[in-house]
Length: 607
Image: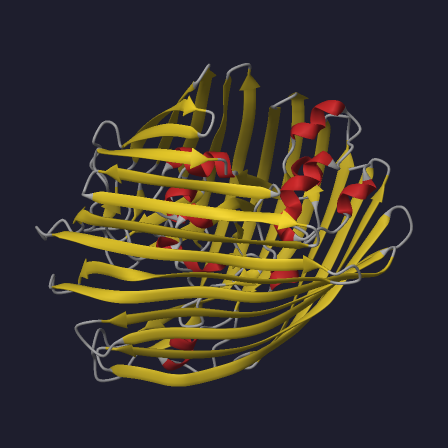
């Protein structure tokens, strides 16, 4: 925490280059990844006063996952629940919080829907991703609503050289076909690139009570073009995905729906003075689902402007301040009823002060939000760090978060216009110890108390004479300890993560649905000559299915294996076996998961 220069701001697209610019106190610390999501500024992971993880492009390629949820599921403490196979509705629970308490950003743009606050995890193809940053704990002081359990930020691919070309084609079980191509580069002041990918599969029997397979297809496009004009850097970028998902409705009737998601942004960056960097991101994000056997539709469209200023105040202090404004319009028609054209404006200002004085670090952050639906909310974070030795860092923090009532909460079934925001207060203490080059251990203890959770209450039972209503009534508390160990022993590398937590309903004392108390994940790779052999293991404990049933989801362990061989300097053959032991398990009651499956991929060029 003594290296104040790591607080310098950098464009998100070039953060991978910053690791070569960091000059830490000990040479061994150079192996630490650089992250920007935790503070909106670039820091090495060991100097960040939070629990963070990074999924790299190399790890993404090796996994051959069909969507981003397939990458996240091998992180302990991140519970992924999927209603069947590829393309089915997917929920991500971080640190035991609700699934809509995880904020998802793509290149700095919020993509959580306005209808229910969730994110389209199942629609994001990893072929378009450069890296993923995971920050556990509340970050509403910087990002606003949804950031209670944590923030996950996806950075789309950018060329890392003057000319960059790559592509891949793959086949696999369930009649799966994948293809991708990327091209990009830089010339003088200009840069640009394009990526296109396709993923299609016949899927498998997604419901335990049905016999037909349900398929999925996804076409994604990633474009960007930028120019360094000296006093101003300009970039226009666009990520979009669209396709079709087949599933079974409540009555086990086979149906399907079309989806499209997109993020388009214009980013302007400048340095008006030597110690002042400023950026303005103007964005449009869209989430649209249309059911093909009825008129049902769900839509969110959000226009936003995010202005950030990073000002160095002397040698030991960095001030970050900015403003955010967004307009959001939502529609939701389910079984022919619902609402259309519900729109709101969100306005916010935020500030963060990072002070780094020798072995001591201090972070203070606050955000004031004025939401057009429910009103005003102020959130904050306070963190203190101490460098005990050159290789041991300690930190303690306290912070608040909130989740705004969604348009479904307010205007959908059981809608209540008087709902308040769901709120949280989180305490945590962490230790980061680096044993040597490539060997780091991080342990974090936390407690997150969440109040005013919105739940449906029906006084006379389902469809009784007095209609039910959504109310701020539930409370939860999650206490836990999480461990992350990253290692490198010559040709052997990998990481192990483990979480022990108690996600508790504070009124009933029951375990919260679909969140395990214990989980362990391990990723191991062995490199020898032209070959790389790897495996991923996940073990998770039992958990309740939903709050409306007594069904218990059993614990399980699942093992994936992978291997690759470098055929030529530019050509690599990859293979993956998912669920090697053909484990039969459920992450959502009544929905099946992938059995043993084989996927083969031929990759050309670099990342």
